[in-house]
Amino acid sequence: MIRIKDILDHPEEFEGKTIDVKGWVRTRRGNKGVQFVALNDGSTVKSLQIVFDLSKFSDEELKPVTTGSAICATGLIVKSMGKGQSVEMQAEKLEVYGTANPEEYPLQKKGHSMEFLREKAHLRPRTNTFGAVFRLRHAMAYAIHKFFNDKGFFYFHTPLITASDCEGAGAMFQVTTLDMANPPRKEDGSIDYSEDFFGRQASLTVSGQLEGELGATALGQIYTFGPTFRAENSYTPRHLAEFWMIEPEMAFYDINDNMDLAEEFIKYCIRYALENCRDDIEFLNEHFDKELIDRLNFVVDNDFVRLPYTEGIKILEQSGKKFEFPVYWGADLASEHERYLVEEHFKKPVILTDYPKEIKAFYMKMNDDGKTVRAMDVLFPKIGEIIGGSQREEDLQKLQGRIDELGLTGMDWYVDTRRFGSVPHSGFGLGFERLLLFVTGMQNIRDVIPFPRYPKNCEY
Ligand code: 4AD
Ligand code: MG
Image 1 (cartoon, protein in one colour):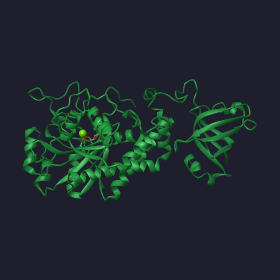
Image 2 (cartoon, helix red, strand yellow):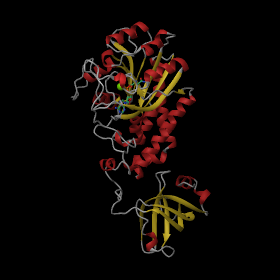
Image 3 (cartoon, rainbow, N blue to C red):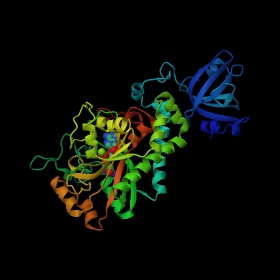
Image 4 (tube, rainbow, N blue to C red):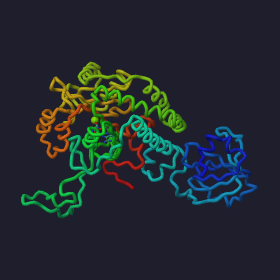
């Protein structure tokens, strides 16, 4: 199967040859003598121009060749006279697989709003914009696997259905086969989960980290890459109820090793996109975000700032800026605070470290001050938090103390990593869609995943 990308990337190999191309019609225009069809097959954002000489094709034959229709065109590849393309096809034969009625096909003209296209999410992959976004999504997934594989990390599969709440934020989706209308009950009236499918209460995972730690403390360096579920009632342009997360976990890494890896990793992904997805990025730069390429280059070329939370709070307090959410030592940072530090103060990505223990998860390593933990969040322009991670508490007593303090139960399997052969170790989680927001320049996280899941929406 010849794909349009091959033809446009290597026109010299195809010039003078008669071939078949198959794809979807983006536009058809022309006059009584000749018709031009822009054909796209999804392999690239660019379309191949097919020229139909009306002395060879009747109006009747070309009638079903409408925007959105699927065709096979057979013809000679020749140098193009028109600008914008090196070669085009002179059609000799046409087969229409399926027409698309112009009265009904919703993607007629160009320049639909993102909101409109979100309502047509089943068809939006057929637009140039979403084609570019989903090709980039694929390329980033590949780059991530390549990065870790080349470094000797192992892809470790952690469960999607779990009985533990890693982040302790209580934002889990329950998984059950019990009859909702009439669940079995214990004597005290509470639901008897021993009769549920797993014999206990189960949920969709909010993070593979805890199981990832079991892998890292055996294989040394692992990463997970899979769907993650959070029942947060967040309608923001940066939250999804179902998103993908990459979580590397490394034995013998301290927080500095962890930060070095995070910075190298994210720069690698962005560089990969710049080098391998040029057409798509140029398209997005031109149509959506004129600063996209500059911003990507800037991140690749500059060191990230590394700063303790306490220093960050001082900068925010002294900024004189009126924030919607108050700033004080102990406050969890909102996106507006993170973006102030990154976009206005430092004008660079920032890794904020050593957060107050109260606003971070139980597994993070306590600092000597007894107040802060060895957390590290990577903050990015336009996005805010793109990575969250930490050095983990490897001390059995301290970890058990935190677990008891927070009243967590059923953690014996996790604590065993500290009971037997405990090691210093670290890891982090990169939100895949947040990375894609950055790399594509899209404004809303719902536009970088094919089928977004968010409150009150579960279409398809
Ligand atoms: O900061 P978070 O909650 O960290 C963890 O889950 C740790 N277990 C990671 C680790 O240390 N292994 O989430 C990590 C990242 C965030 O920085 C963000 O990029 C993304 O996951 N994220 C979301 N992305 C989209 N929608 C949501 N609702 C997200 N919640 C977190
Ligand atoms: Mg976080």
